[in-house]
Length: 163
Image (cartoon, rainbow, N blue to C red; front, top):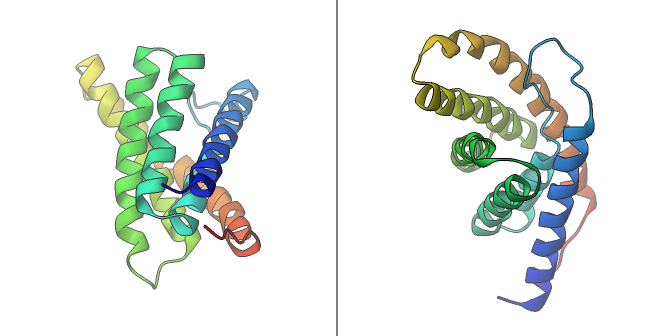
């Protein structure tokens, strides 16, 4: 891997970690626990379009692991990993279809992130009752996905990376 690409990836991982930490310090603005914007996903969407699939996957997984190690727990790692994996998988598939915009890809990622976390909660808590929480998380994932997608689209259009 080229030094320039490695440096850009390291900077993006660092930025994603800072955004994750900052977001964890913001009090919840809704009465539904666990609802977050997912600011670090701006970086993942940006990397997906500007660097490529392997790089976006690496950035996302390293961010999840490092943030969980530094600021989280084993359970938070499992929830984040499940959400990130499902989100990335969906975004990778939707990105292949030219008709879908950055925002659409981000919205799917936001919704699937919440679906992945609910799935992990069902496994860890050994109950399906938590699925009733899903409609609220789908709505919040859609709203957050639009916000993240719009911000990522601005960055994608304005930042030119030559690797």
